[in-house]
Length: 277
Ligand code: C2E
Ligand code: CA
Ligand code: CA
Ligand code: CA
Image (cartoon, rainbow, N blue to C red; front, side, top):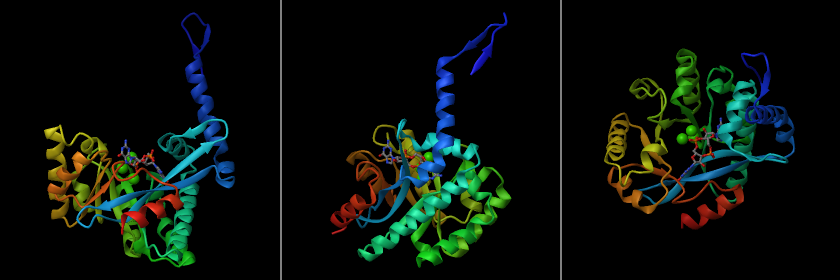
């Protein structure tokens, strides 16, 4: 990036220039990456506390780039959203996840999987039909698919988003509010959106054993969500201390490193087989 100073000399900021180059590389290389297996899905268990069973999971995307190495999903998802390609990526994710569920079913494992939708996906009125076609193609029940949306995604164009969410719900998909409590959060979403689950952001969960205010936010969110008939998942529980507290707050499900990091599909199958016995 070139910067004009007051005396007319153009200064190149190396740091910025490099990061701009990196961004261009990421946007340019996505199509090829999709075809060459650089992108793949990993699956993180969600553990039902009362039953101590893993009955659902979240699919998270990974990209190992030949020259850049591991690219954090937060970074490339944002760029792909900006470049207008997120719908292509989301369709790819849906295909990957449903194909994986068919494999697991053949292995005797019925597993609900949540995928992450971005703001642009929720503006797309064709999305519900596309998801229905994919479910039909793979012969899977819609209840095996859960869709996570962030509050900021809902903010974008509330009318269209509520309509799309309503259609997805009609298909029989599960809906979750992701990262609850962060961003432009509004209690009105709990009232107005047809959701099944609230996922409490890990910023409130990680210090739950030492921070009284965080604990208060989590327990109040559980109570409120239950009042609406939603289940509650706590994200990002890293150690066992949090477990007793979350259980005492009547949180339904926990997703975090304490139980497991996101795993490749084959490892995930092994993990669940061992955990659920
Ligand atoms: P998210 O949807 O909030 O996903 C949860 C993130 O928390 C994941 O990061 C997961 O690996 C991490 N996590 C889970 N348990 C723990 C824990 O105990 N401690 C800590 N420190 N972290 C934990 P990840 O995989 O890096 O994904 C980051 C974000 O990228 C996701 O946040 C999501 O917003 C986005 N993302 C990932 N995959 C996809 C995708 O397929 N599509 C879209 N649109 N977004 C995705
Ligand atoms: Ca998520
Ligand atoms: Ca989250
Ligand atoms: Ca997030």
